[in-house]
Amino acid sequence: MYKMFCRIYQAASRIFTRFLPWREPVLLEGENSLGKLPPLLKRKHLTKVLIVTDEGIRSIGLMDNMLKELREEGIKYVIYDKVVPNPTIENIETALKIFKESNCKGIISFGGGSPMDCAKGVGARIARPGKTLPQLKGLLRVRKETPPLVAVPTTAGTGSEATVATVISNPDTHEKYAIMDLSLIPDFAVLDPLLTKNLPPHITSTTGMDALTHAVEAYTNHGASEKAKRCSREAVKLIFENLYEAYSNGKNMEARTNMQRAAYVAGVAFTRAYVGNVHAIAHTLGGFYAVPHGLANAVILPHVLEYYGRSVYPPLADLADLVNIGDPSDDKEQKAKKFIEEIKNFNKKMNIPDKISGIKEKDLSIMIKRALSEANPIYPVPKIFSEKDMEYLYHVIQE
Image (cartoon, rainbow, N blue to C red):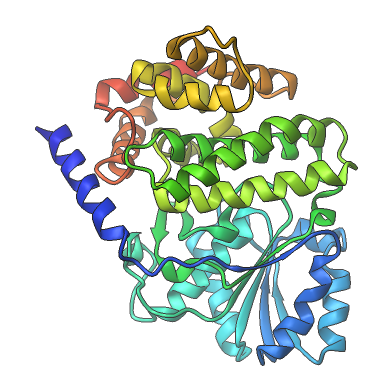
C-alpha cells in the first residue's frame, strides 16, 4: 500500500509541475566569459553584491580579475569566504548577516556546489525572513522572490547553477537536507572553462561523476519529461566523451568546456525529473562523515543501478546505445549491464574506490530512516526501497 501511495503522489506531482513557471538562468558561456559579468551587473543596477566563496578559492586568486573588473565598473562588494564543504546553517546565517549589514543588492556564488548552496540558502532566508532554514526544508516553501543570484561554478559537476535546490548540513544532528523552490534557480550563470583549468584530477573525476549521477538518475526516474530526457542524454554523451580526457589532461579546454556544459544540462534534467536513491544515501554519508558528495555518488551509483535490476534495463539500454556500449545484437539486459560495468570502469580508471570506509553500524538505523525519508514519496525512482533494501545497500557500499 505504501508503494502505491508513493506512485500516486509522484503522478500527482508530475501533473502539478507541468504548470509551474520553469525558467533557466541567463548563460554567459565560453573562455573568458567571466569578464562579461561585471558589465552585466552594472546594466542590472546591482551596485553592491555579496560574494560567497571559500578560503581555498580566495587564496589562489581565482577571483582576482573579476574583483578588479567589478571595481572598474563601480560595483562595490563584500566577501564571505568561510563556506565549508557541506555548508552549514551557521555558514548561511553568517553570510546573511553580512548581506544585510552591508546593504547588498545581489549575490555572487563563486566556487563549487558548497558556495552555491550557501548563497541559495542566503537567498531563501532573505525571501522568507520569518522562517528558519529547517522550516524551509522540502518542496516549494520559499515561494517568494530572492535577491538576484549569480552562479559562477569552478567545478563541472553539481549543476547547482541550473537547479531549484540548495543542500544544507546540520553538524549537530548529522542531518543533510534540501530546500527546493523555483525561486532558487540562479538568475545568471557563468560557464567559463578557464576557471576549471587547474582543478586537481580527483576533483575533476568526482565532480564529473556527480554530473553523470544526476543525468542517469533523472533519465531512469518514472515520468521524466521530454526536456529532462533530452538534457540527460546530452549530459551522458558529453561525460562519456570528455570526462576522462579532462581528468587526464586538465589543460584541454575543449574537454573542460564540454564538461561544464554536461554539468549544466544534467542540472536542468534533474531539477525537473528529480534525483533518486543514490543521492538519498549520499546525503547521509555527507551529513554523518563529511564524505564529499561527488565521491559518494560515484561509489554508490553502480551498486544502486545493479540493485534496481530489470526496472532500469530499458533506459540504461538506451543510454548504452547512445554512447556505443555493447553490440547491436545485445538485448536490453545485456546493454544495461554493460553500461553499469562501464561506470565501474570509469571509476577504476580515475582511481575512485568502489567502497566507502568509516561507516559505523551504530549510525545505520538513523541513516536508513533519513535516506528513505528523503527519497519517499518524492523521488519517482525505478524501485521504491524499503528499510531492508536500504540496509542491504549500505552494507554493499561499506568497506
